[in-house]
Structure formats: structure tokens, C-alpha cells
Amino acid sequence: MRQEYEITLQPLPGVPVERALPLRQRLWQQGWLRKGLILIVLALLWEAAARYQNNDLLLPSFLQTFHAFYDGIASGELLGKVSISLVVLLKGYLIGIVLAFALTTLAVSTQMGRDLLSTLTSMFNPLPAIALLPLALLWFGLGQNSLIFVLVHSVLWALALNTYSGFMGVSETLRMAGRNYGLKGMRFVLFILIPAALPSILAGLKIGWAFAWRTLIAAELVFGATSGKGGLGWYIFQNRNELYTDKVFAGLAVVILIGLLVENLVFDTLERVTVKRWGMQR
Amino acid sequence: MNAPLQGHTASNLNTTEALLSVDHVSLEYRTPERVVRATHQVSFEIDPADRFVLLGPSGCGKSTLLKAVAGFIKPCEGEIRLVGQKVEQPGPDRIVVFQEFDQLPPWKTVKQNVMFPLLASKTLKRREAEERALYYLDKVGLSAFADAYPHTLSGGMKARVAIARALAMQPKILLMDEPFAALDALTRRKMQEELLLLWEEVRFTLLFVTHSIEEALVVGNRILLLSPHPGRVRAEIHSHQYDLHSLGGVEFQASARRIHRLLFDETPEAETELDFADIRIAY
Image (cartoon, rainbow over all chains, first blue to last red):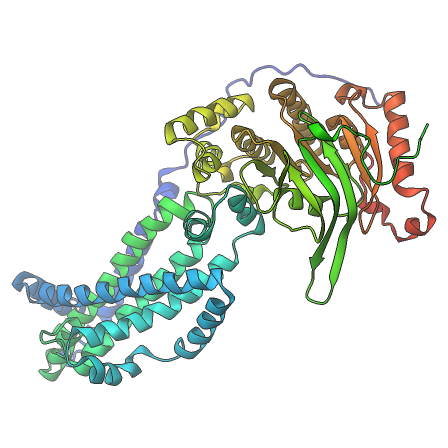
């Protein structure tokens, strides 16, 4: 038979309990560095392809596009277009958010609201926003309002659907805890449902933003200067007509850049200080 | 040794002083296909500073009963009264500690979690709520974690936060729904000990649901035995003489065997329906 034994533990001699990772691994953990590297590789590929193709009209090189972009920024033309587009976009986006929250709040509190939301979403969500533009022009005339109308349509259903499914996913225990403390109605939605469903709501906001941006550029491309002064889509459209392909690329680059900025600065920051910090999302 | 009880009523006949009285309460819950009776005409009374345990096999409706006391479920028969007032809806005078770890909102720090019910029910102003939260966090030994988020805590620590949060509300009665069932055996033992120490200090009134005979004997001073499906009162048993030190003692074992017999033996047709795996006799 084996012997029993006991060991009196001494303080650990000279074995470090934690140590820093090497610099290379720490750098590699920085998301912006990895993504930046991807962008540089893509730009290099683009430059190489353009030089091989050697046709400025069809495919301007990265450097030519960069020059057009730089000139556009320096002359203020591009920034002006961007600000026109962004103002319209933000209006539509915000109205869409407000309406989506009103609809989902109604849906979580009454059976009729639930039916209303599911019917409306299944009707309108598959309908491309741009298809409503002719109708919008008829109703609201040539102007910002018709653009805002289609923007609201593109944001509302995606966000409402995500928010609602987020609300439905809130655990029964958390709901009961909230009701236990006397939370009801609007306060219950505000203090329990919205924070608990924040991962889905943020996903909805992201999808809504992408939809809105897409819809706006398309609407401006198709109906050009409906709003009196043209935005970024109009800039792209106009320059294509005049065969300034490098400017077309610059316009597209701005669309992409704004998308990247919003995704990486606004939404990533929002996620970092909320759902990631709370351990609700990895 | 096992004198029959009169009817279904609990042994305490002093009705004027009861803090909580459950009077012939039947509860039903609905599934998409049928209505299921969870408890049938259950009656008992809880006095101030009681540690009252509802004990029974799974499916006896003990959790449903606790949720009815909390006000989440309306009885289809009978009445629940808290200090003479009929229970109609959930309220901050009866704070529930759930079994699940996700009862703590993950978007609030430990301190904010303890303050949450105080602010949500508008019991206290922010500064007073903060003071009281810190006081009760100290009581459960979590002062150092006041600013941590729940996802960084262990299961036992989360249970402690939930208890601190409930105590901070100073409810008329504390409702605990198998609060330690999801913890490992060692942590559970420690939590039972801490709960008893807290009770020694604060003398709150507790309604505790468990399916472990041992836990019931250790935590409670009175135990209500419920029969399986639908839950009916089988017996009420005193257990104030036991604590964690009496585990394994002769009398303790005798009481555990007696409860076991009451829950399983005497109704032969019920015995065949029972799933013994549902019942934890010892850890």
C-alpha cells in the first residue's frame, strides 16, 4: 500500500506569476494594425492591376484616384458633397430609429402591436427602398423629404426586426427581477429590455446604417440633384458623365471611407464601452 | 413520533401574528396544450424572522408557489396575504433571489446592481442607496468588488451579490428560489453558512425553496413538505435545532430519514411515478 503524505507549501521561489507577451504578439493583437495592413495590400494590388491594364478611362490607378481625392478635398468640393449627403442621411437615420423604437415598444406591450410589427415587417422589409423613390417623389416632390422618406423605410424595418428579436431574447429571470422591483411600462423597457437587448439593437443599428447609406447613394445616382444641391451620389454620377473616372473612383472611395470610419470609430467604440465591457459579447 | 396534522393547515395556529399567510392556494400553469395544476389547496403561515423552507421533489410546485408569493402568478383558488394585505402583483416588499446567475443585469457593476432595486422602486435617493449598497456588500464580503462587472465574478460571488441586493431592499420577506442549486458543493456549503450568519445578524424573514433534504434541515427552522404533482401539504417539521455542525449527527440523520419517508413511502401509488434522480438527499 502507498504512503499518505502532506506537503507544507512554501512561497513560490522566483517563478513569475505573470509575464508580458512579446512586442510582436502585442502589436498583432491591435485590430487597426491588422486591418490597416489588409488595406495597404489591397491598394498595392489595385495599383499593380491598373498599371498592367494601362487604361485611365476604365481603371485609374490608386495614385491617380488619390490625387483626384486630394484635389477634391483641397478644393472643398468633395467635403461639401459629403456634408450634403450626411445631413440627409442622419435625418433619415434618426427618424428611422425613433419610429423603430416606438413600434417595438408597442410590440412588446400589446398583442396587437406584436401582430402589427410582424405584418408590417414581413410586408415592407423585402421591398427595396429605392423602389419607393418614384412614389416618394410623387408625394413629397423633388426635395430632401423624398430622400428622407426612402431612408426611413430602409432603416426602420431592419432595426425594428433586430430590436424586437433582442427584446424577445431577454431572459425570463431578468424580466422577473425587473418586475420584482416595481418596473413597469416605459421604465421597464428603458431599464431592463433596452440594455439587455443591446447586442441585437447595435447589430440592427449597424445594418440600418449600411442600408441607409446604400439607399442614399443609389437614390442620388438615379435621381441626381433631386434635392436641389447634389450629394455624393450626384458627384459620382456627374463625373461619370464627364468621363472623369478618377473622380468617380474618388467619390466611391469617400463612400467606402465614411463606411469604414463609422464602423470602426462609432460602432466599435459603442460596442467597446457597452456590450463588450459588460461581457455580453466577446 | 409522527403525529398526524390537522387537515392541510400549518402547525402554527396563532393567525394574528403571521407575516405571510398562504390560504388554501391552488396554482395552475398553462402550456400550449393543457392547463396543469401545480399545487392544490396549500396553506401555511410564516412568522417574522422565520426561515421557512418549502421542500419537495421536482414537480411539486414549490417554485411556482414562491413565484405566486412574489406576485408573478395569480392563484386560481385561495389567497396569499402579506401583513394582512392581499398579494396582487410583484412588488419591492418581497425581493426574490433566483437560482440563475443572469438575475444580475450584466450592464451594471456590483454596486450599481445592489443599488438598482432601491432606485427603481424609488425607495432611496442615489447617495443613500449607494451608502446602503456598500454596507450590505461589506456584509457579504464583496466590498473589494463593488466596481466589478458581474461577468467577472464567480458563481458564488454572483449569488452573494444577489443576496446583498435583496437584503439592501430590507423587504418584508426574502424569497429564495433554490439560490444555491447551481453552485458547486463546497461553495454551496459556504453560502449556507454565510446565509445563517447573516440571518443571525439581520433576522430577516426567509422563504426558501429547495429540493435537498439536507439543505432544508440546515437552512430552515420550519420545513413544509409538499407531495409530488400536484403539490399538497404533507407535513410541517421543525428544524431549528440543526445547523451545519449537526450534519451527520444521529438526530439529524433521523430527521432526514423521516422526511424521506414522508416524501416517498406512505403513498405507494405515488412511489412508482417518482423519479428518484430528481431528489438530492445528500450532496
